[in-house]
Image 1 (cartoon, rainbow, N blue to C red):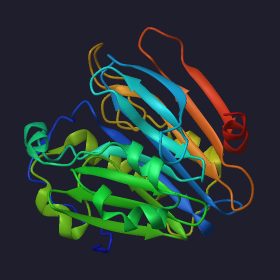
Image 2: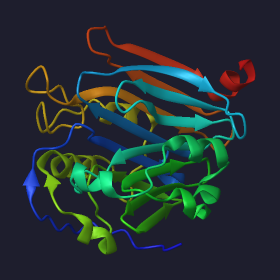
Image 3: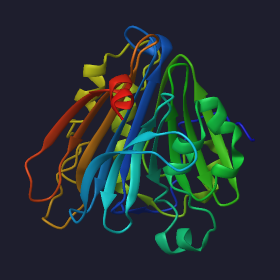
Amino acid sequence: MKRKIFCLSLAFALLLPAAASACTLWAAQGSAVNGGGSMIVKNRDWLPNQYQHLKLIKPEKGYAYFSLYAEGTPAGTKAGINEHGLVAVSATAGSIPAGERAKIEGLPSLTRVLGECASVEEALSRTDLLVGPKILMLADKKRVAAVEIGPGSFSVRVVENGAIFHTNHYVHDDMLTFNVKVGLSSRQRYERIGELVGEDDWTFSFSDFLGFSEDRKGGADNGIFRTGSAPGKTRTVAVWAVRLPAEGSPEIYVKLLNPGEEEKVFHYSAEKLFEDY
């Protein structure tokens, strides 16, 4: 497994509007978290043409996991936490055009990571799962990690005291070559979430992280929380957030913004959720 050093330097070949599958991811661990442990959030952005719901999944083999699940194309788990407290979220590597991404082998969903891995360390050791262009973010109580996966290679940053953040293009030095076309929204959201979580000496509460999910600086199409400047444009359709305290049960927060429905907010204790399953 290659481990690369995270770098904020960017090389943009071309600035284009963001793809439908744009998302913003951020996480913190250790001294950056009030009370210790880890936190992770995904703002899921999509066209208003999918219905999302929450469900517990128990594979025939492997670990049970709680899933943010989207119906439609492409259907599947978009974020999740498993019974061992491993959280996995992903974002499209939109800086590789969709047609090129479709030609590259290996686009495994989050289901294998959640169903087969009990920790961040274990997930990172499973190089067979780190394939297919995407941005993957992982968290457990002890560490958080950002994985940039490109054609035939990947780059990892593990954090045990600090914060990480991502949008839809590559930022690790050795992955910049895969930035064929970088969306304006991805760039602006990356800069903004970096302003919010990027200071080394900041300590964040779960409320702080949930507040960042509502940040609209950048406007309807380029803010962290996107409303879409027209009815058919990409917007934030869900917020998935998990606090993993150093001791005790993970806390799960989910906001669903399905088209044509009022927003729905859910709070769960992971321990109780899996006990009741």
